Image (tube, rainbow over all chains, first blue to last red; front, side, top):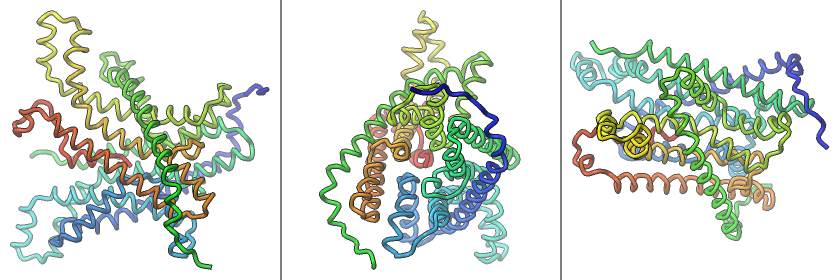
Length: 224
Length: 244
């Protein structure tokens, strides 16, 4: 017979520090994945506007495939499948970062590509005609304008990846979800602990989303 | 000892994997149908004149958008039953999770559909004597649903991918089945690769199907490229809309 369940949120109190620590790991993971995605995504975006059809096709394929694979399946493949092929064992954190970073890179490359196209051709032509080299044109004319356009959607991608980090718990990365599971295995207060976890994610994601909206307003390009 | 890949070991298991895929698809279809029903009142509440309704819908949508699917699933399957005292089967918990997670996106799809139905249509319907309910069900809704088809297709694709996470609570769909096969055969590389290919092909077929459907149902004035009041999503935009 089921014993009566008492809701005791006070069992959470001793774990506040523990939760904050887990939250820190989650945010650090998301930031690391974002960093990878920014670098790889920029390279992919530049490849996608290249003269060489092969490079463009590679980027199109990369983006397509990473859109189609569920992140959970990709994690399983990288953590359990890949090591037997290459003969190198990956730590959970490495595997998690590879997955989150390479998948986010696909989305981020689309953001960069769109913002690259958003910089008007006139700007590039003007820069070239005053004698800037191709590299100078990119670094001091195209890139700064592109960053401004890319900032709000990059923020949305960051919010997305914060939510996705919860899944790396399944391969044993100690972020907030895994911390919670561990705590529950000691005290069996699944309702209190999972509720707290959901509330924490909700608060984190909502405040990040609010930040992204603020970014959008701040960087909106107004008609003159 | 180095690992020798043996792809031939997969063949005997293909029929089983396909059965797993069928479970995945059935889960998706059931979940999207419930989502489509649940999301309509949500969209109407969001567009309601009453502030309280708007607020309630806003809270529901924000919650389902900000709590990760995996966390919601854990809470629903392991946490909530302790509180309410009712045990749920993994399948029930999985379907509820999918519905809750996707109804926000689906409500957005309806809302964008409802917003593009020209005001004149409503006014004309009311002018010829249709009641408010008749106007909504016979004039506004059919047109709105038509516009909502592409985003609904996107939701279905995202859901197809999201069902993989249900494996963690023991729903025996294609991912869970693959995990047990890896346990039985000790061939993680081969089976997880096949699983990945199954998802890629599945998404590919669904995407192609959506493209075909859109071309087939395009109205003549849209095909002519004249500016339509019903704005269709460009294929590029549609791609963008697919959530991971």
